[in-house]
Each structure stands twice: as C-alpha cells, then as structure tokens.
Amino acid sequence: MEGKQERPRAAEAGAAGPKGQEVGIMVIKIALLILFFAVTVGVGLYCRRHTANVGDFVLGGRNVGPWVTAFAYGTSYFSAVIFVGYAGQFGWAYGVSATWIGLGNALIGSLLAWVMLGRRTRIMTKHFESATMPDFFAKRYQCPPLKIVVSVIIFIFLVPYSASVYKGLSGLFSMAFGVDFRFCMIGMAVLTAIYVMAGGYMAAALNDLIQGVIMLIGIAAVVMTTLSSQGGLLSAMIGMSQIENTADPAFQGAYASFFGPDPVGLLSVVILTSLGTWGLPQMVHKFYTIKNEKAIKTGTVISTVFALIVAGGSYFHGSFGRLFVQPAADGTVAFDDIVPTMIQGNLSDLLIGVVVILVLSASMSTLSSLVIASSSTFTLDFLKPLFKQKMNGKEQVRTIRLLCGLFVLISVIIALRPNSLITSLMSLSWGTLAGCFLGPFIFGLFWKKTTAAGVWAGLICGIGINVSNLFLTFTTPTSAGALSMILSLLIVPLISLVTPKLPRNFVEESFACYDEKVMAAHRMVLNEDEDQ
Image (cartoon, rainbow, N blue to C red; front, side, top):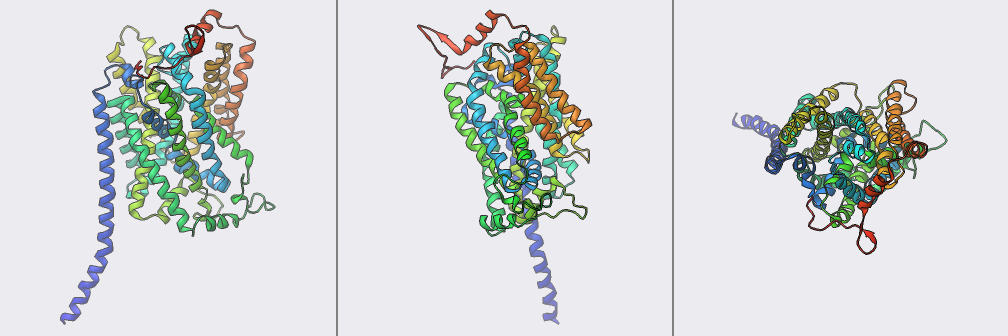
C-alpha cells in the first residue's frame, strides 16, 4: 500500500514542477516590469527639480548632449507601431523586401535628417527664440495666425499616432501577462502621464536613453531567435521563396525577391516613414534642444546606427511573418496579431518578458515625445495668446502638465475602439502632419523666397489629401501620406514664387544667423560651452 501511495505523490510533484516553473517565470517578468516602472518614474521625479520654467520643461534648457538627444530621436521614431503594426503588415505585404523600409528609416529618416536639418534647426530656432514649431512658423514668416492654426493641427493629429502606440503595445502586453488589453492600456497611460508631467522633456530624454539600450538588446535577441526557429537565414529565405504569390501567379518567389511583389507600394511606405520625420514636430523638436556643434555630429552617427539596428531589425523580423501565420478561411489576416504570434510561438516565456519590456521601452519613449510636443504647442501657441495677461511662467508649466494628462486620456479612448487598425491610425497622423509641415519647414530653413502664402498652401494640401482620403478612400493611408509630402515639396515653392515676398531686410537678417561676420563671412559654430 505504501508503494501505491508514493506514486500519486510523485505524479503530483511532477505536475507541480512545470506549474511552479511557470509561476517562477511570471514572477521574474513582473519583477522586470516593476523595476522598469520604478526607474521610469524615478527619473521623472528626479528631473522635476530641474524644470523651473517653460524652457526647462519643453527644451531641457537647450543643453542636451549627443547621446541623450540621439537616443531621444531614435526612440521617438520607433515604437510598438513599427515593431508590431508596420513590421507585421508590411512584412506580410512585401516579404523580405520590407527590410528596405528600415534601411530608408536609417539613411533618410535619421542620417540625412541630422545632416540637413540638425545644425540649421538649432541655430535658426535659437535666433527666433522659438520653443515650438508653430512659434517658429509665425516668426519666420511674420504671420501670427500660423501659430494658432499649426498648434491646433499638431494637437489634433498627434492623438491618432499616440492611440496607435497604445494599441500596438497593449496587444503584446496582454499576450505576455494574460491581462485584459484595456487594463494594460490604462496602466501604460497612467505611467506615461506621471513621468512626463513630473519631469518634462529632460525626464523623457533620459528615459529614452535607458529605453533605447533595452531596445537594441531586445531586437537582436528577437531576430536571432526567429531565424533559428526556421533553421537559419538560408532556410528561412528558401521558405519565403516557396510561398505562392496569389496576386500575380506569374511572379513566384516574390516574397523573397529584392523589391518584393509591389515596388511602388513599398516606395510609398519608405517615403512616408523616412522623409516624413523631416516635418514631424516631435522629431525636429529634438534638434531645438541639442547643446552644441560637436553634439550634432556625434548625434548623427549614434542616431543612424540606432535606426539601422532597431528599424532594420524590426522590418526584417516582420518580413518572415508568412512562415508563422496562416490566413483565415476567408483569406483575411489580422495584421496587428502577426508579430505577437511570431513571438509567442518562438520565444521562451522569459524572453517574451524581455521583448515586452523592449516594446514597452519603445512605446513609452514615443508617447512621451508626442505628449510633450502636443501639450506644449497647444499651451504656448494657442492658449497663451488668448490668456496673455493670466499666464505667467508657472501657469504655463501647470497648463502644459494638465494638457499632457488630457492628451493621454483622449489617445486611450481612441485606442480602445475595437476596429482601429494600428497602421491606419499612424498613417493618418504621420501623413497629415508631415504633409502639412514638410515643405514649410525645409524651405523655411533653406530658401529665402519662401512666403506665408506658400506655407498656407502646404497646410491645406496636407490636410486636404489625408482627411479627404479618410472619407473617400481613393488610395491607401500610406500612399495618401506619401503623396501629400511630395506635393508639399512642390506646392510651397510654386506658390511662393507668385505671391508677395517677405521684407528683404527681415529675410537677410534671419539667414545671417548661419554666418558670423568677422573679417570675412564664415560658418557660425555653436560654442562648446553654449548653454542657451
């Protein structure tokens, strides 16, 4: 009898083993999450002591070093929208050629953006003492109404982008921890609001540095694990080459080809996600804050390498989605579920926890930049002119903090809608903002003949194309965004050529900030110890 009694006990111990292991892994994942939250909030509370005025809260005192600025730029660029939404959907659509999107993000969205815009943005915005894009437009083009209109556009159209980040984050988070995605979304919103409202730009930037390191490690681990599950890169490529191209039966092996089954569609995504950064307020804002000339050069290299690893790795990983996910019976695919399915099927529970922290890091950094960009512009450029006599420095900081909370709340409400697709939300936001501001911002920095009328034409073009496509649907959201950006670069100079020019003395004085005349004109160099 004793021997018979021992067997059930052994069986119970065997059953308890895997269960105990699961509990142990969950404890580790929760501990990692708590540590991440504690560091994030701690940085916010620490930076609160250094946000005495609006300049500190919005710009970090224009004294941010190259590593912090470069990581802030990169982590604001890439979030759960890229890693989950875009990598899944466009990896499915274009196969391995989707990697070109990541390369475009690195070379055009990071390298060229820093080279072309970094120095000029820092110098000219300092010349006009502008802390926001709306204020820069108003002063550069001597048109105060631009400040109000641009600030409203930014606040409205950054909300869908923020919502897309929450949506991409919550699905992966709920998969890893078994918690309803709505609670995940609300929890992330509260955390973002706490540290941004407490420490402002500097808190966001320092957290970006920490979160960026996590992203680099996590992306490398995910890519290697995914390829390993398919027997290596060569086996994975062979598998992709054997997938049937139902759209064009004559072009088989399309998903393993150099430019994929739809080169034109691929190009539109590259333009939207790469060139678009040149006109996004939350991205160019990073150049306002950088410390000096040396920091710009160093930041260019760091930002480009970061983008190559994170963006290139994300799209390369997503490009193998067809090896792991099968369409439903009606041929449809839940694009937002592709990357979570790949991760869940290939990674250990512990590594899934690491990936969740990766996506959390990417998303929190992007959200913080969106929150600060929208709330600061709306306060300084819309509310302040209306209540000029009642808004001193402390009132402005308090209002910005309150709007941070409101912005987060609205974003979560939109993200909770069941039918909101990540890529659609982001494409609407990114396409409209870049379509509105790309031409006006670039020509404002480089071309003396740009006029206020040209800027208004650019704004109308950006909103008109993207919003009308939202209701009429004459093309995809990504193509509409790319089209509006290209037209912005054409319409702004064309309208400027046939409309009244700005006063010549004002324009010459504005562009003189790039040169310091001593014995002869030479390029102005930002002092190494310049703090303002």
